[in-house]
Length: 69
Image (tube, rainbow, N blue to C red; front, side, top):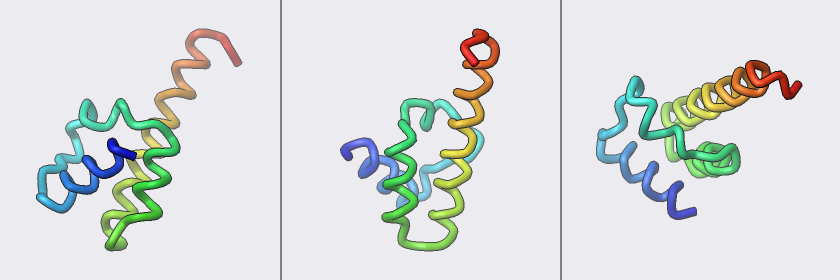
């Protein structure tokens, strides 16, 4: 939950840079879901959904590369 609050604060302050992926790599799927559910605007919701989708695709790619699937 602490991570969720940090990312909400960054978004509100305008500190979120969409291409700065390193800021979001530590998020877990439940974190992005929580951010989406607590988003104050549609723009925030869409942004956090995109981050969640990106992280999920990255994990899927890693699993496929390691031949775990």
